[in-house]
Length: 253
Image 1: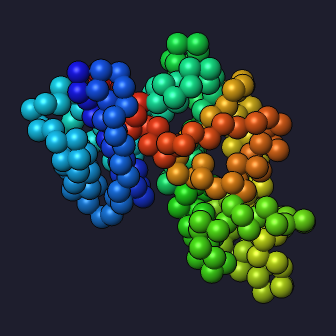
Image 2 (image 1 turned 180 degrees about the vertical axis):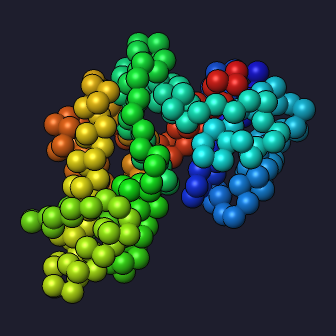
């Protein structure tokens, strides 16, 4: 059975193809202005890569912030369910998932079958998400991909009191004006995000092993800050950014 999962996030759109329970291909593209168009484009690309026709696909599940814009999907399923399914597929030992996406963050507790037992979610604002980090990177004039390594150089992280994007940006600008080192500011940002996610984790009483999913999982400095706050190791899958799409494809099987 050939199924496709499409995860339309606020920043990137991901697709995964599963054939008879085995992951065959995953791909990442930019969402841009038109979520529907980006979903159609990435769907076409994965089919073309595997030399498949639309009629060869027996199930399509969409997920993510723009899941309802994927008109050709058979079903739309929440990111929480899809990230749980994808993480459990990658490692059946996983019992908790932390997903920091472009505009929200989630902490998910799983049972030994990969089903969702409980979750906490911050979707009221972009505080501490991928979009938040992009704004902070612009304010600091640092490439976002350098954030992780830069923060690990810090000896004394700055205190960032607000995770509201507007107020945090003002705080960062004030710290720059005072001559604070960039690495200390970045480390402070990561620590503030770590504190927020740790608070969500306590609400759902997460248990080990823990996996982090989403594009922000590539940020080594933030992962370290989270590990320190949670006092436990966090597993980062090689395919962290496409875990939601993998889960969607599996749920379409």
